[in-house]
Amino acid sequence: MVRLSTNASGQCYPRSLTTQNATVVLAEPWTDTTTSTGRLMLAVLGGLADVERDLIRTRTSEGRIRAIRQGKKWDVLVA
Image (cartoon, rainbow, N blue to C red):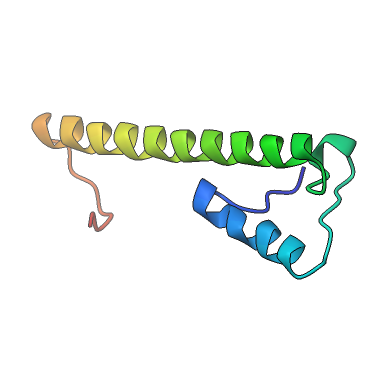
């Protein structure tokens, strides 16, 4: 499945299409947003994307903190 959004808030794109009488139908039947199952799957996948982004953010932050405590230096500007 091509990623339509990277988080749950990005799901407004397919929803906005359906409110304008357009239909989002992808290669698989379970991704058909005209059905309740398709909308559920879109919501679940959006929720999983949110969790994944939070985990990446947390692990990256923990890694930076650990590197600083160990005195490691890198040439990348850290925001």
